[in-house]
Length: 95
Figure 1 (cartoon, rainbow, N blue to C red):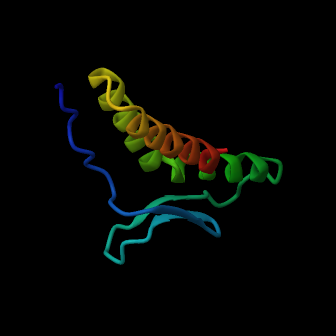
Figure 2: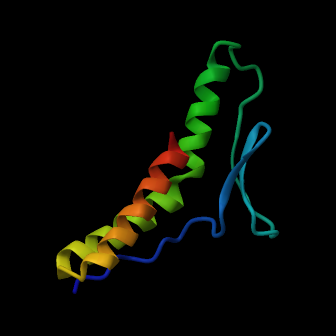
């Protein structure tokens, strides 16, 4: 079975916290993205939506990798249902 490269980005669960997206891992370098100063007020709506999607990126990647592995190997039905549930949760987090 084909293996994917390891994710080399910031580890941990990513979350939106005020005007930044950060990892829950308490280490230096856990800030992923910060809203720029001097933003246009109308862009605040976009920032929140973009931040939500960005914070879901690790979950989306993992869910897609899991689905790929499961479907490529034609697993038992229960495993596929679990992977689909993970994918659904990641998609909902992003939206």
